[in-house]
Image (tube, rainbow, N blue to C red):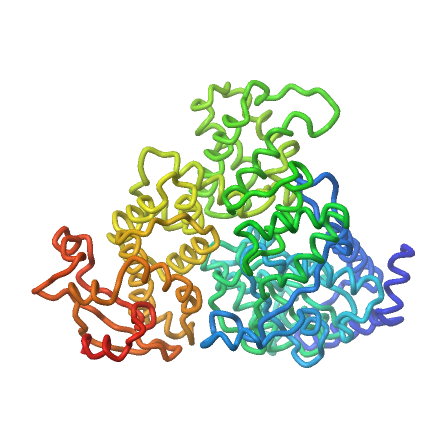
Length: 630
């Protein structure tokens, strides 16, 4: 064994692996299942995985920065809400927070769900936790070592007969090199148990003896709902059975819609002013941090929604150009531009490039087209080499590229740009999901008109939100998208939630127009309709996941529409209460209409039925409004 594993095995206990295998053999022997794993194989498997986790966790790197940053140098201790924001009923609940490290290192709660917006620092927090565990700190004192599974790695695994609940167990079994020998003819006692159940029992037995912290990173990177639901079913089974091993799962807030027994959910809070200063100091050093922070404080990024990923990009851009942009779209654009400008200068060697005659803008157009095709056809964030080749063959003629250059282009994409990275033996992905979404949005917004194929559009909620922000007329684009496209379909609950979440992050510059107010109301009405009419959703949710986010939009709507405007066209039909106790009104158009919305009603732009929250449209004099609606 290597010296690294010898040091590591001290914390693991002298013969813990031997005990684990003995316990496994005893448990499996009852069902006539043999265990061919050995102590040496188990130790080698743990060592190999630990080395992989060590390399993964040591540094933060993307091609926009001059050199990788050590995780320990730039990590900032984060805070978490003890109750996720979507469950907050009042602003005072935001005060119920704690340091993330106190939750990760605590012994009170075994299994955790760490939620956060894109770029909130979920993965970096796991990297830092791994670093702490591998350097003999007191992190996770009851666990012996980190066992890391990135959910994106499960995308290429297939479930038997579309049963994906076994994928997580299979992955753990592979990492620990657990070899089971099933009898050709099952014993009578084992006749009621299939191999799936026995594999699960074997994995649970090993995890309980080895006591790792099982880190499950990025649930939102499983795009197919059927597979995601199946994997969550597998997480549920493990959470119910594991008492000595610990589970920590991360997911985007807007993409997580589950309740998992025996797991407690928290949400990463926005960075405080002190944390922003600490981050800049660690990233840029004392000489540049002050100048950078002065620029941040004078920009829209100075609000409390700034995230570690955004801040990292801002720091990296500042290192290159000595200034920061003002909008998320500017960050994406600048980031892609920097990578493309360095396309042929990544290494100090000359090479024949299929893109050597391309200007930066043309390269960006090609990548945007490719991102759109991959998103549309694959609907996943990972893709194979053959997917890249097939995509090239569909679009190469639009860019004057010879068909014979397909392989050369693919090779260059995977090795030179930094935008696409290899994530497996034959699989690739964009270096960050947000970049694929941005490039896809660039392609969509550059089309002559918004595509009419809603089947394709409904797999791109994030991309459409970014496209709205990128549009030269975001108000008109948003109005056309919502009332010219979304209004003709019963949008899914998941789609509307993801679209709105991303729209709030992108902060498009909407005009102070009635049309924008109508579009926001109609979109939220679609959301409430899907929520109320879909009985399945009532079983999944005990609150309105967008209630907090839509409070942010109240001000936008009130600047454009008044209660009197709505009452001029609609009348109250019925009331109900959401699962979080908030009152919801069902408004119907009345025959005698008046006010500035009457024309929109006559043009069939306004829907005949509108679902709204009372808190979304009520004025300060809520009693008067309630009487009018009654």
